[in-house]
Length: 459
Ligand code: ARG
Image (tube, rainbow, N blue to C red; front, side, top):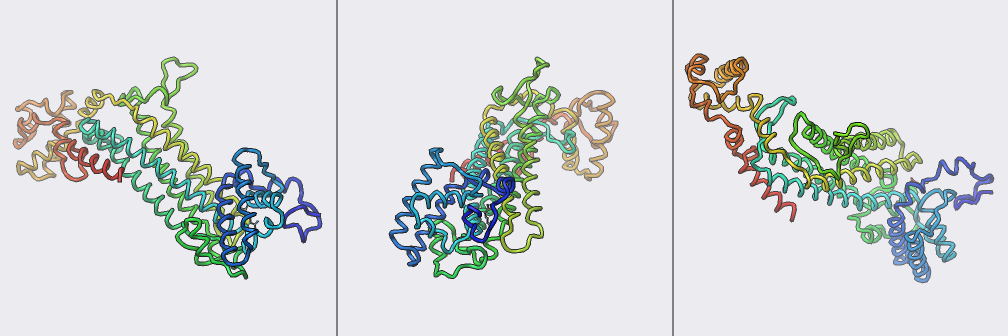
């Protein structure tokens, strides 16, 4: 004989290993609050529709309160024999209040229940991630404002390209994170529809009011199609896509922090509290946090792959495969939240080595484009200007000097159109200040953008 809530048609008990293998309590127990909220809303709606009595409703609501207290105090014992959070809570409720507990599952299935719980739980977790993203943006904007005029080399191909301001570089990440925020917000809006009432797959024979249940749980509407409601997991795919993109942004930022903290760059130092040493090399201070955050991107993107592959080719409607949907996203969200927290806490302590940045910004002929632009302003066609500056760079490499150190005679030898006045004014400060238009790297633009962001983040 089976001892399961669904055991009526079974003659033999579940295999002991299968019982453990089948259970999802170790993953879904964390949705207990959402499961209880869903049951409260469902019972309230059933009563309003005359399907449950007022007496049953009172018993159910009181009983659910008690179950919630027992879980929160740690005295509740989840049993794997009861498979999941849904049946564990229902069983305990029934132990406390008797038959009324057994009536709660009227017009409901675990299929619409799990869909509802997961959406509610992930809505809450997404909101927490969005708060973390916003906080990190605030930290970056503050740092960017402090370094609006700090000059560093800008790179393409990781080769010195043109001078940029450190503030401008940091604001690039503020932009990326704002799109991450918007992606989460967008996914959150799309998933905010309530599966409850879809029951197993086709709806129910009872005269339910799905609009009421949806409203009680803060959903915008009930899901419009019961089959879709119980089999849709694209909200998880969307959330994990958003999480993956955000973690990729964090990994790029991590990589730069790691490079910048190396002795070879020497651009920044990170606070001791976020670094560790080596057990053998006494001189070492390792940027562990950016390294770990860079690594976390792998497992977060892995979670996206996992849900995509789990759902691939699954026929409608619910399939047990879908029980695998939660572990990966819970892990990914826990880790992304950790990454965002670490960055938000670590970056206010970042120390920029302005001297090293400035020195590096001026090396590698980073002002060459500006010299070409000066020639163009004097009427030289850009292609000719490019050629003239190219020759100048070759000359400077041979002489081991910088462009602004060229003598008038050398300029004249290279090309009659190249003047000493053009090379003498070359400096990394003039280079960045000259790029003073929307989206440019000039300190003035960085300050404008910071002011815009401060306002936007506080709205
Ligand atoms: N533990 C299940 C899950 O996470 C709940 C739904 C189970 N439904 C069912 N008919 N077995 O997906």
